[in-house]
Amino acid sequence: SLAAADMAHTLHPNTNLRAHEAQGPMVIQRGEGIRVFDDKGKEYIEGLAGLWSVGAGFSQKRLADVAYQQMLKLPYYHTFTHKSNEPSIRLAEKLAEITPGPLTRAFFTSSGSEANDTIVKMVWYRSNAMGRPEKKKFLARTKAYHGITIASGSLTGLPVNHRDFDLPAIPVRHLTCPHYWRFGQEGESEAVFTERLLAELEAVIAEEGADTIAAFIGEPLMAAGGVMPPPAGYWEGVERICRANDILLVADEVICGFGRLGTPFGCQKYGFTPDIMTLSKQITSSYMPLAAVMISDHVYAPIADNSAKVGVFGHGFTASGHPVSTAVGLENLAIMEEQDWAGNAARLEAQFQGGLRSFADHPLVGEARGDGLIGALELVADKATKRPFETVGAVGRMAAVIGHDEGLIFRAIGDQLALCPPMIVTADDVDEIMTRMGRTLARLT
Ligand code: PLP
Image (cartoon, protein in one colour):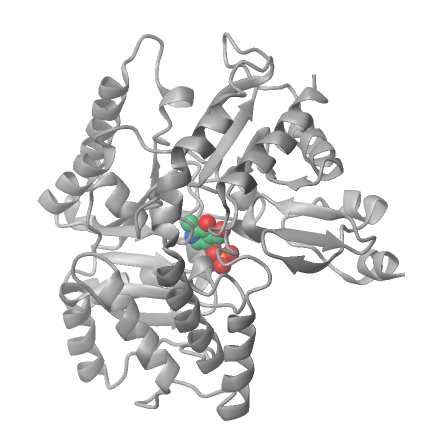
């Protein structure tokens, strides 16, 4: 059977492999709008849009048509050594137009991890080009998720992605996760929490020396680590301190980008302007693998000068600027604009976030949180003390199984239940998602 073949021959990412050998896969066979169907025909609302990524929903025929037409016309071409192709040129132009601030150039990769690895290498190359070879360190945050390759996995701040992989393997300092509910101290206001985190940033810069720190990277809203919106004033402070210390600011918008928070990009929601931006996932609604590194002119210029000196910018992937992926990306962004995803998220925000917060009085819900069309319920053993469960993740896994039974897919990040539905959801869809979540929670007590 399909399940037996999967258990015998597949090594699943992010999976307890021994548990999988016993339990087998959930095989999803087809999708329609915000729903997917398994191999037994059971229907689920995809409350996480796949992996926070299928903005357009699961049956957008225009994306399939564009991919097919591009495959017939030019299925592949590369972008090395001055070669180019029309979809990748048009998509770079489009991204320069819609991203905020001075981001003018795109470098394409296939995944968010490759994009963040590319950023590390670009920043190092730039520091060397500027005669500052000691300016190489990165600042990130605990609970950040920036990918799993050697460099991006080092920027990630989750123990499970480091443990026994010998990461971090690049010079990086992880600062306190800006999640007030969990990391605010007894009696500390949100404003004082923000001040404490900004003071920590300044202290780390002083300790390491600003001339050794190249960049600060952060997700505007930390997503895969547990959906944690930043406290008020945090990003303005981080931006001010980075500028004062000549540290590049990188916004990893792999999940927040393309309308998720009710603004076109997450940095606009929280009021900061990055020098570099990572984009992926909803760039094609994940119909094709694609990511982009967006950079500003002051990042580009020293890199370009150095490539002339060295003879080449010696970095790139076979699939950088793949014509099918970029053609699908262009069409997806056209659909995004026609359907006004950011506007839809802004309009539905109160209903979606209100729905989540309506579960706050459930005996196991410690915090209901989120912004725009992304949110989470954090389950705890003791609501008053916020004490986590002894075996982290067991209750979350149980909730996910019940959720499946109720026809709702969400992501259990430990005991945090994350929702991030396709951008095409309607008010009725949000009601249905909350109804199914409510039934799930009712069965969990
Ligand atoms: N950056 C962020 C913010 C992400 O959420 C992810 C994936 O979830 C990545 C980077 C890595 O992307 P990929 O899985 O395509 O390598």
